[in-house]
Image (cartoon, rainbow, N blue to C red; front, side):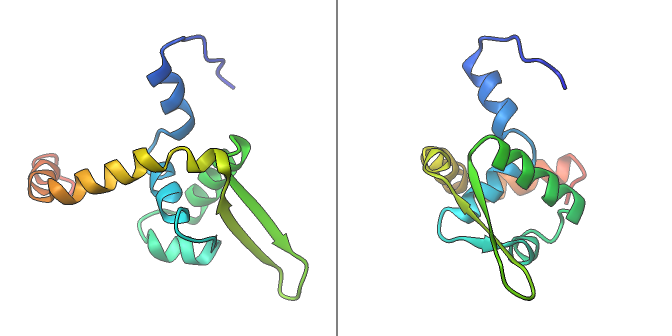
Length: 115
Protein backbone atom coordinates (compact mmCIF):
# COMPACT_ATOMS: atom_id res chain seq x y z
CA UNK A 1 0.00 0.00 0.00
CA UNK A 2 1.27 3.44 -0.94
CA UNK A 3 1.95 5.78 1.98
CA UNK A 4 0.58 9.30 1.52
CA UNK A 5 3.16 11.95 2.33
CA UNK A 6 1.52 15.09 0.94
CA UNK A 7 0.05 17.76 3.17
CA UNK A 8 -2.11 19.17 0.36
CA UNK A 9 -5.71 18.91 1.62
CA UNK A 10 -7.11 18.45 -1.89
CA UNK A 11 -4.75 15.58 -2.68
CA UNK A 12 -5.41 13.90 0.68
CA UNK A 13 -9.18 14.25 0.25
CA UNK A 14 -9.11 12.91 -3.30
CA UNK A 15 -7.10 9.93 -2.12
CA UNK A 16 -10.16 8.96 -0.04
CA UNK A 17 -13.05 9.91 -2.39
CA UNK A 18 -11.30 10.05 -5.76
CA UNK A 19 -12.05 7.84 -8.70
CA UNK A 20 -14.96 7.43 -11.00
CA UNK A 21 -17.40 5.74 -8.62
CA UNK A 22 -16.94 6.73 -4.98
CA UNK A 23 -18.64 10.13 -5.15
CA UNK A 24 -21.52 8.60 -7.10
CA UNK A 25 -21.96 5.88 -4.46
CA UNK A 26 -21.92 8.47 -1.68
CA UNK A 27 -24.46 10.62 -3.53
CA UNK A 28 -26.82 7.67 -4.04
CA UNK A 29 -26.60 6.63 -0.38
CA UNK A 30 -27.45 10.15 0.85
CA UNK A 31 -31.17 9.59 0.37
CA UNK A 32 -31.53 6.04 1.71
CA UNK A 33 -29.65 2.85 2.57
CA UNK A 34 -29.27 0.52 -0.40
CA UNK A 35 -28.43 -3.10 -1.03
CA UNK A 36 -25.60 -4.13 -3.34
CA UNK A 37 -27.95 -5.11 -6.19
CA UNK A 38 -29.78 -1.79 -6.03
CA UNK A 39 -26.50 0.12 -6.23
CA UNK A 40 -25.43 -2.03 -9.18
CA UNK A 41 -28.72 -1.32 -11.00
CA UNK A 42 -28.26 2.41 -10.39
CA UNK A 43 -24.76 2.25 -11.92
CA UNK A 44 -24.97 -0.29 -14.76
CA UNK A 45 -21.50 0.58 -16.12
CA UNK A 46 -19.65 -0.43 -12.94
CA UNK A 47 -18.45 -4.00 -12.70
CA UNK A 48 -19.38 -6.13 -9.70
CA UNK A 49 -15.70 -6.38 -8.75
CA UNK A 50 -15.23 -2.59 -8.92
CA UNK A 51 -18.40 -1.89 -6.92
CA UNK A 52 -17.25 -4.35 -4.25
CA UNK A 53 -13.82 -2.66 -4.06
CA UNK A 54 -15.24 0.86 -3.93
CA UNK A 55 -17.68 -0.11 -1.17
CA UNK A 56 -14.84 -1.71 0.82
CA UNK A 57 -12.70 1.42 0.43
CA UNK A 58 -15.55 3.72 1.52
CA UNK A 59 -16.30 1.46 4.49
CA UNK A 60 -12.62 1.40 5.52
CA UNK A 61 -12.62 5.22 5.40
CA UNK A 62 -15.74 5.26 7.65
CA UNK A 63 -17.77 7.05 4.97
CA UNK A 64 -20.31 4.24 4.66
CA UNK A 65 -21.58 1.50 6.95
CA UNK A 66 -22.18 -2.11 5.91
CA UNK A 67 -24.86 -3.90 7.88
CA UNK A 68 -25.40 -7.63 7.59
CA UNK A 69 -28.85 -8.88 8.54
CA UNK A 70 -28.84 -12.46 9.81
CA UNK A 71 -31.63 -13.98 7.77
CA UNK A 72 -32.08 -16.47 4.97
CA UNK A 73 -31.09 -15.44 2.36
CA UNK A 74 -28.50 -13.11 3.88
CA UNK A 75 -29.17 -9.40 3.43
CA UNK A 76 -26.48 -6.70 3.34
CA UNK A 77 -27.34 -3.02 3.32
CA UNK A 78 -25.09 0.00 2.85
CA UNK A 79 -25.74 3.39 4.41
CA UNK A 80 -23.87 6.63 4.72
CA UNK A 81 -22.21 7.43 8.07
CA UNK A 82 -22.31 10.77 9.83
CA UNK A 83 -18.77 11.34 8.58
CA UNK A 84 -19.89 10.49 5.04
CA UNK A 85 -22.76 12.99 5.36
CA UNK A 86 -20.20 15.76 5.76
CA UNK A 87 -19.51 15.27 2.04
CA UNK A 88 -23.15 16.01 1.07
CA UNK A 89 -22.44 19.64 0.09
CA UNK A 90 -19.73 18.40 -2.30
CA UNK A 91 -21.82 15.62 -3.86
CA UNK A 92 -24.84 17.94 -4.17
CA UNK A 93 -22.65 20.59 -5.80
CA UNK A 94 -21.25 18.09 -8.30
CA UNK A 95 -24.78 16.90 -9.11
CA UNK A 96 -26.08 20.45 -9.57
CA UNK A 97 -23.04 21.37 -11.68
CA UNK A 98 -23.64 18.32 -13.88
CA UNK A 99 -27.27 19.31 -14.46
CA UNK A 100 -26.45 22.97 -15.05
CA UNK A 101 -23.68 22.24 -17.57
CA UNK A 102 -25.02 19.03 -19.12
CA UNK A 103 -24.68 20.22 -22.74
CA UNK A 104 -21.06 21.29 -22.30
CA UNK A 105 -20.27 18.09 -20.42
CA UNK A 106 -21.80 15.98 -23.23
CA UNK A 107 -19.74 17.93 -25.78
CA UNK A 108 -16.57 17.44 -23.73
CA UNK A 109 -17.23 13.72 -23.36
CA UNK A 110 -17.87 13.42 -27.09
CA UNK A 111 -14.58 15.22 -27.80
CA UNK A 112 -12.86 12.69 -25.54
CA UNK A 113 -14.57 9.81 -27.36
CA UNK A 114 -16.50 8.72 -24.26
CA UNK A 115 -20.04 9.09 -25.60
